[in-house]
Image: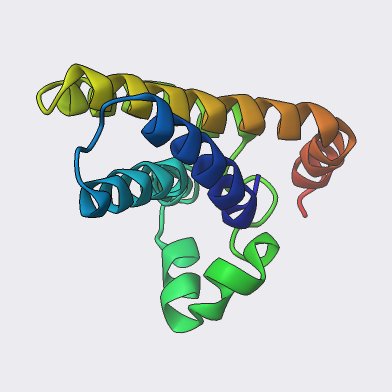
Length: 149
């Protein structure tokens, strides 16, 4: 799923959580809590660059974004090529990062940890739904990589 989609889902989930949980007692605290949860639901995708680095052996994807930052917002389909980051690698890295992030949030408060866990769960669920919906594209990418491009 693209970051713009995760932004919308994370913002909606975070809004519900901030309203339901005692995350902040002041209006500015509500804004900070909402913003932090929304950002966490998007920024977990930075791990894609680490996965691509392991797969490709270089930082070409990260360099592409640094050379043209508009790609990050405007055309995320141009950041990674077929085979740079496979769905299972992406999901695995999320599953490894999410518990560490939730444990770190737990040092702040139980409510913060619960809220972060729910936002990251929503992120993973959306990624899984996205991958199932795009299964034909995945198969086409596998064939393209197997054929050498």
